[in-house]
Length: 295
Image (cartoon, rainbow, N blue to C red; front, side, top):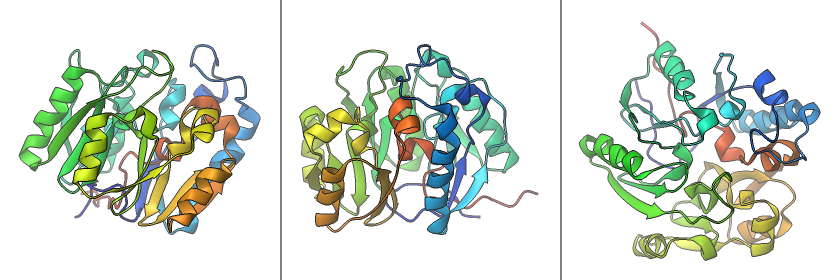
């Protein structure tokens, strides 16, 4: 059976999602660092619209059926990551998300998907700080959510897979409590096309992208700031086709002028409020996942 991921742009086929539950809808916005535009009455409608965008593109949804007291668990991207050989369980750096990887562990076991590694001990790592540049190249950001030991363990897990791991420091920017992942600064929107917020991009990453032949599409500063970094959080559903949060017309126009097809959904009361974009919402296993048949 085929399953797994080593690309940010190959077509989405099957993804794993977790529905909004009581932990999110009843969340204390101060405790979870959500903004006051969070509106639980609108969350389900926003989420349904997002899911419809996926299914309209032929993406098959697998639901993570588990109750949790972790409000951020709806952002399924962070607590594990998928490789071509199986899943890696992460260890979230946000204290309130500790143990979230066990939700993913149960999902993988239920669907007979191998777990090839796990971030353990004092290491922290969130998949939002990882991004596949190509089949054999993974970039990882070290910051408040992913520490050096977490990066080191990711490198060790990737060695047998012959994947080169490139490490970059993430800036402080909005402080220790804010969510600034590596993927807050860069999204791949097509083969060798990267949408980036250049002022916060590490110089060494900028040079690596140039060396690998990427065309860099610059995010407009005003919309990056007003979106709280989420204008650059773009979910690519196939090469040159993506989903982004509505309300950022300059960003959309720039992408479309570069040949990228864009679909949008209104998500302020969920995504902007809770610091997680369409990529964060999407899969435990990012692209072209085929779940094995259970024995």
